[in-house]
Image 1 (cartoon, rainbow, N blue to C red):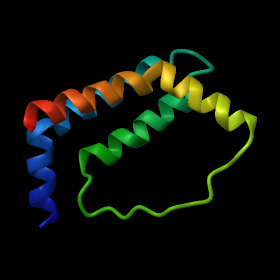
Image 2 (cartoon, rainbow, N blue to C red):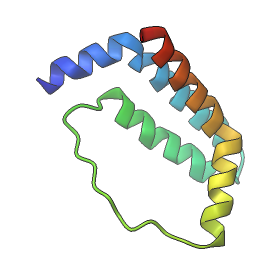
Image 3 (tube, one colour):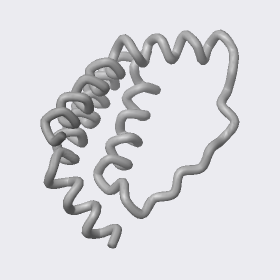
Image 4 (tube, rainbow, N blue to C red):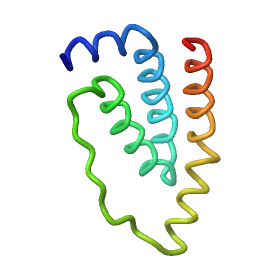
Length: 94
């Protein structure tokens, strides 16, 4: 059943989201500051390519000023564009 869900998701927008994460990861890896964010984009692209049948586990999030700064950088660089891409596809398919 998860194979069917993955195929349907890939055909109806998953490929576009996958390309967005891969492109964002490549662009972020061009700078030294963006490498951690680029690697996270590649991890997210792997999750987007086949989201069904995976298990998500909650871990204790790190805290502190560095986490806050990294989250702000994530929102500014790829986060906002990827969120807008997800919203546009959701509106298109709704």
